[in-house]
Image (cartoon, rainbow, N blue to C red; front, side, top):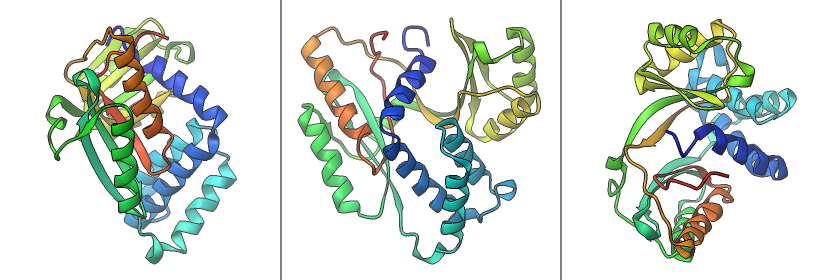
Length: 245
């Protein structure tokens, strides 16, 4: 993934989140509520909740806040009405965009997503219109500065656990798995004491699109910024090959 480092994007987003923790804490709080409703309050028996807790810790959410969210969700299971929805569409320059949302008001969310696309000269499409351009994969990012293992040792660990590939960047390692193998690979890394900057099942573009027109770049960035600032939006995937920061 040379030229569009996932690790660089993670660092950039964390810098943004440091300035707006209310947004990311809201997102994680909703994910905790849904995870507890679906699998119970014990992360040892609820892999989805364990994943959300890891996400919370990587975003510096205090332990007491996490525990409070779990307890609140456990006592309020019947009243959790958040629903997942996915929107697909095109930004200017033919950029494919997928938006995952988690909301208690679908009408509000749909209107906000449509508005974001419209303000950046993009268009919402029908379900499936761009998702075929992406592969659903497990993706684990490891900061080289936080990893004492060599590339060869790391490769052996993840491949033995069922990973599909290990890619080396200047500042990080990227582990790719099939969706069904993600949990086993992440567990193997944890057992070896490997710190992970990011670990998630995500949508990885099959190909990236490069944009040279500065006006089009601004329009794409406008769509992405509006979506990422929306509390109902959980994740945004796209195939734009962003310029290096």
